[in-house]
Length: 322
Length: 269
Image 1 (cartoon, one colour):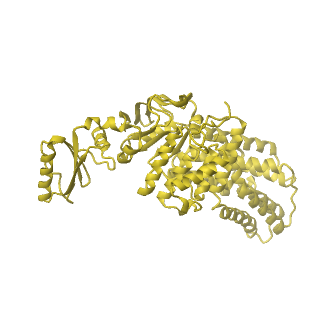
Image 2 (image 1 turned 180 degrees about the vertical axis):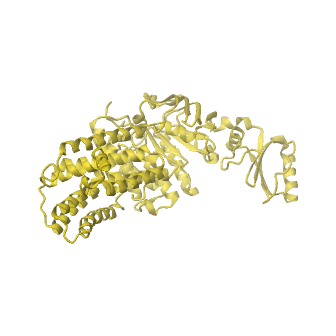
Image 3 (image 1 turned 90 degrees about the vertical axis):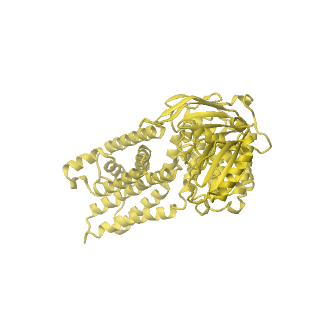
């Protein structure tokens, strides 16, 4: 990773006070300022409707900020959206339109459109097919591919000849766990090439492992920015007690040792002090005995706890804090 | 700015990272690459699209003859030389907006719009692709008309600009429609409505004199009658007048559509 301040060749990506107000008055982005260095994998986390996609569309020149600046190295991307399209590769959340394309063909064509040298594009397409374990489908048409395989082909299409920034919006949607690991390895490879990678997601667990730094966005505002460790710093000295409640069970009354809680479906996630671990286990055992809970797990706090604290949302669900 | 792809790579064979490119080579490269992309994109549909256009053209030429026991020669020539206009417009004006509406529905519109190619070149690439099924269909319709109604054409070199201008204007109108209207359903309905306007209320396969006066007058300023005039004028002698004015009308629609399309595609509100 290229840490903050490393700034290879001056290709720092910056947004300064980016605000986007849609014609209907919705303030989708509100004074968002951040920077990403070449080689960094930068997470953009937030619940649905947080303003992540709006920010991305402004970066690639599909939307104009109401105010604020977006620069990439020497280029002003707001004033020059054509430069934005050349410098940034974009994998949207939706599947790419490749029904008529064979998988390898789509990857190669994308690389050629991005101006890649034919020999390099051909070789790299084969490397990506192998690295993502797509060999079985290399000559299949998009229409015959499963959602997960199509997603991986889309990833290869936008990274075969990457821009200086690669923006990945929920890249692992529909992808099986094994190939997700292959994909994350390639994301890291992009960083090694000097690409600034934007990972847009609401899957905090995956982001925690993949990103160098991240920003949490909610209601269009940047709530926090930093490394995963710094985000979790506030939760040091705490543990996470997760209870799987019995179907139909109401949220039980919380004892004073519970510092915070979120219910996501049948899961009740609570945060406790380390010193209260023994008492917390006792409480959890009581709930099991009473049939309110079916199982529990005690562990270290994660980035997800910080995310919940900041946004009031679980990463996989939009049910709020109770 | 310089045309270059930075050669900096961290290992042999790794892709370099791009600089911002500009200039004729970048434009030509973008045109050619998107042309290939569009061609591959519609290749599964291309045979059936070509067949539909051929059947549409030949069907009109032969079908209208069935309305008459003895179709007048002038009417046969009028119909046969009007059908090519329909062939030239169907892909750009009707099929193109349907594709863009589908991209919007499926969420891939942003990906296509994020391609690092000048927008004008993307338009020209699609225009070129739209000619591929249209030209054979147009030719076959004319040959079928000549075989069935025993007339001869006086094809002049003006057929080249006439065909290209007609098709380009149709493509640009389709572009303006598909990018100017953001609601996919509205785009689909608008392009389908144009089918009825084109086939039913535009003097393409029949003389304007057969329309109500107000509709004939309106068609003097709409593009379809003028398209038919310039195409027909390049195919037969002495059948049409006002070819120069027709080129002006078609040209005005092309420019207006290009402006609307450019504004819609570049509009970033």
